[in-house]
Amino acid sequence: MKRVIFIGLVFFLPWLAFANRGADKGFSIETNLKGFLSTEHYSAHSIKSFESFLRKLDKKNASAKSERAFVRYVFEKTHQRFLKNYEAYASLDETFDNGSYNCLSGTILFSLILHHYNIDHQVIETNYHIFIVAETAEGKILLEATDPLNGFVSSANGIEERISLYKQNQLQAQQRDKSYYKFRFELYNEVSLNELRGLTYYNNAVNSFNHKNLEVAVQNLAKANESYFSYRIEEFSQILLLSLQQSDLDLKTKENCMNTILSLRQKSLPVILASN
Image (cartoon, rainbow, N blue to C red; front, side, top):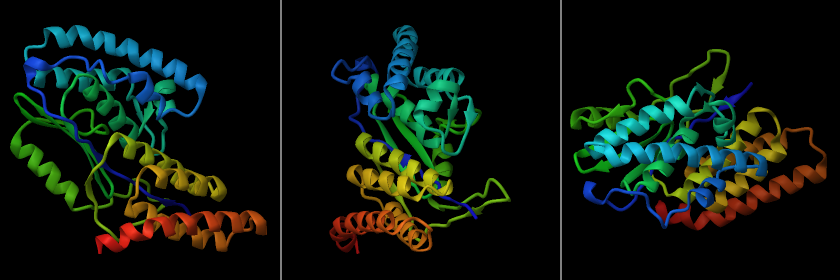
C-alpha cells in the first residue's frame, strides 16, 4: 500500500512599483537555480535553458503595457516552455529535461522569474496546495502552477474564493488504486526561497518512501529539516519510524536511520513546544 503526501506553498519579497520593474542584478539566477538541481549535468543544461528563456522575457518586459500583462505573459509562456506534463513527484531536473512538473517545481520556476524581475510575491504553503500571490502595480494576482487554463486569477473576488478553498485543506484523491495520507494539522504559511529547498527534499523523501527506499527517504527528510521546520516533516518522521521498525533492513542500517530521525525530531522539539 502506498501513501501519497501532497504539499503546498507561498513566497514573500519586497514590493516595487511598475516604474521600477526590471531585472534584479543582485539576484543570481545561476546560484539560486542550482540550489534546486541535483546533478552537474542537469545544472549546466537547465541554467543555460532558463537564462535563454529569461532573455526572451526581457523583450516582453520592456514593451509590456502593464505589470499585470507581463505576469500573464510569464504565466502562459512558462507553461508553454517548461510545464508540460504533470507528475506528482517530478523534480526540477525533470521539468527542464522533459517538461514533467508538479506544484512545487512549477512554483519554484515562477518564484525565480518574479524574483528576477523584482515583482513582489508570496509563496503560500497549505496542506495540499502551493500557490503564489504576486503584488503588481495593478493589484494582486494569484498563480497556481498546476492549472494552466485557470491558474492566473486577477480579480479580488476570484483570489478570495481560491484562497478560501485552499484554506479548507481538503485532500483530493487523484488515483483510486492508491491510499492517501491525511494530515492531522492545518497549514497556511509563507515560505522563503531556502524553505522551498527544504520542501524539495521533503518531496524527495516522500517519493523515496512510496518506492519503499526507506534509507534514502530518511536522508532526504534530514536534509529537508536543515532548511525548514514544518509540521509535515514532524508527522512524516513518525510514519518513517513505524515503517523502519517493521522493515526488513539489516539491524545496523535500521538503527542508523532511526537514530537520524530521532535526532532531527529532538532538534525540532523546541519549535513544537513554542508553538503550542
